Length: 342
Image (cartoon, rainbow, N blue to C red):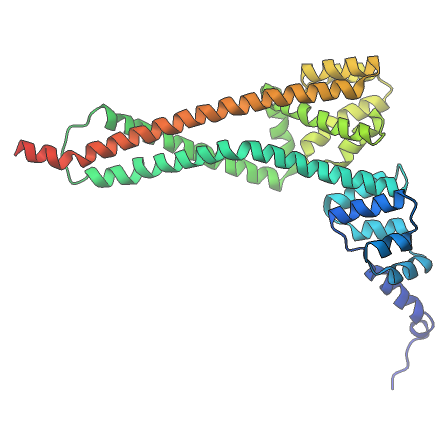
């Protein structure tokens, strides 16, 4: 029988403990993380908090007694954005506050995404339906109906041909946008360059960037982060390279000893309205109130613009569909016209 190496027998218990510790996890949903943080804030010990949550506290407490840090356990048990938030907040505050802040930021991001998607789904749905209807009728249905008849083209059918050319251009533009989005997903450098170009040449994109920045500053201010810490958070946490570049330029300026007013005024990627609200809020001590004022005002502007855009899409869609219906009706009348000529 082959002899076992001494270190495998002497430190076998250590190997088992390390393996055991790595398998210990706090399997929690987002609402359970929030409840766990609230229990710790109320002063409950870890064991009692886990008992109230009906978690297996024996293995967790044993792993902690064996040397596993609870902070590391919490980080290893989290995933995705929650894990990134925890790693950041644990550098600045206690475990309880870090869990609470991370849960709040996670729910804040989800809510923000849901609101933006909810407001943009209907206009996009209308656009896709109208696009599909026009493409199918102008490219397939009407040509199939009229190919067996000889007739003089009127204004409506000429308009259909124009619409068909417009649809072909839209298809090419859509393919270009899809290719550009795929390249942006594959390369952060391309995404950064495209985003910077959009900010430099589009006031709407600049307002969108400032609107998102105001949301994050309000949320981070509620957790007690200073302006410098907030921009450090934004440049480290945000996944989008574009948002990272904007925050990093401001944070680097503050680290260089420049005044916040000078850094903001020099930044070309933030809207003038945001700079005005930010500067007034910082100088008067009403930073949070001014940011909330800017956010609410800009949100009303976005809602009005989305409403106008939706109405425009509906008018275009109904116009296209109306043209198609009239053309189909005229095609259906072709046999009667041929009978009258006979």
